[in-house]
Length: 463
Image (cartoon, rainbow, N blue to C red; front, side):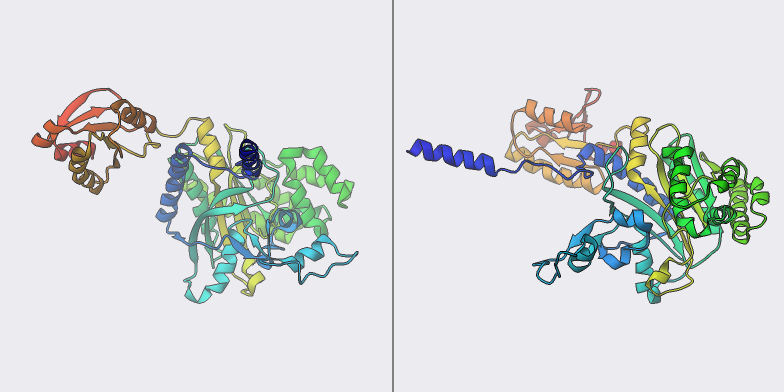
């Protein structure tokens, strides 16, 4: 009977054990990956600081009304909604006519942020009395989208944003192009195109097509051009009500390679001419200043489907890796009006850290030794030796040298295996002789060479 009970308990344990998994589109990051991600983060952050942007953070969750209605219908469908706490169904009205959309309004008040720009606009309005305009901010945080996971597209990912709000000066666009170029240059990413267009130019194009009322549909569909091809784009446009006779105008715009060629096409559109003027200003000034490694490329097909863009739009592509864009952004003239503050123009860009990582990994661009967490390890020969090493550890750490003491006086083979696996550069052996003389035995783990140094000389050498 005892045998049966023991086996029953064992089976219950197996059945109750949850298999460790994570949701699709979410990821764990091991130390090796985090060292490399942090290298990218630190490079981007240094550039943000250098250009005079100040850091802020906003909450993971926003009130759902803050987010919805800002990204277009397709964007809104990708927002992760958070159920109300407690017995959220107790106050819900349910009958045979209840729809999921109606029910959602009753049981959901919060959502995970879809991007960092809309929460930033909300932040600006809430803190407008404490902000000096123009306000330059950067933000490096997670965002969430209920998208279909695939290479370079995840449901949880990092964005690194830089925005200037409170000015409509096009010099901000010029600066942001330079910022993209600086970061790509520092990360040594080759063959980068910074693509540029203007939503007003697209408005002019849609006006010439006689489809002004369908602007959002046209732009969202055009944004898929590289993915689905021109014929599929035209099929979708027809389905959405665009007349087939307007496709000759669409073709004329899509065949345009130079900004100067747009003048004749936009001659009858005031908004189109305004967009062309803005576009030409940015391109001319970037050309005068020059770029270090990237190319500024006019791309009439660039649309960026988010509803809040109103002026210049940007997208960054690393042409040596098929991954889509690694960054994007643009001008938004009145996003803060959604929260009660009108006529505040802003412009911003975002770095897609996850895609930049993939590009750098595939091209072998990460520097050597950025994944070393410990430079120096003291081997542990016993309690007395460990106690002798502790003040030496303190001196190394005070000098900014990453150091550790192996926690137990176990077999030397085990300690050295640990040091090898962790990529430790130097192992210090301290026994009776070293304690008496104060001269340490230092082994270079890469070359295998062994030297004898005082702690002062070791710090000088490693610094």
